Image (spheres, rainbow, N blue to C red):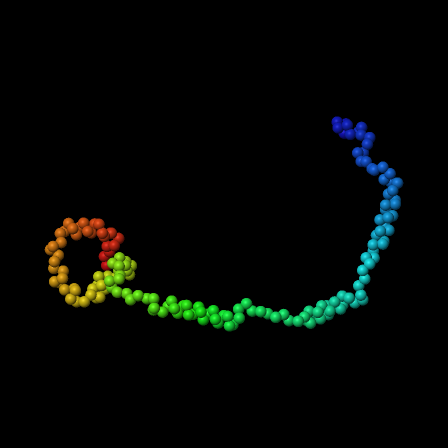
Length: 166
């Protein structure tokens, strides 16, 4: 304590306002009188109020007139809209807009892609052709084709992935 010189302190460091202790008794008595007066709030409930409260609320709720409910969609409007939708659907599904397809209207690439994607073999294609087209006489003219032209065609147009052995 001697190092911090605390033994030489003569004042506590607390200050009290002037004439504080002169008025203290009056302040305490006025608070006591106020508490005594405030014990009665001034509001009074009727006798058996909480016993009859539930019954009075139920009476008010049950005598309420029912409200009229207006539906968002009436049956008449719903039937009208569904009839229009069915008519539009039938219009698009009818064959009025369809064109008749012919063999000439097909692209060669479309047919090739279909044959490749469906894995149709040469035997299946042969069954679709008439026997006159498959005669040996139609394939005799192979002497006119040069071997180099065939090799060039194969190298330029056929991928290794397209060639498969069954």
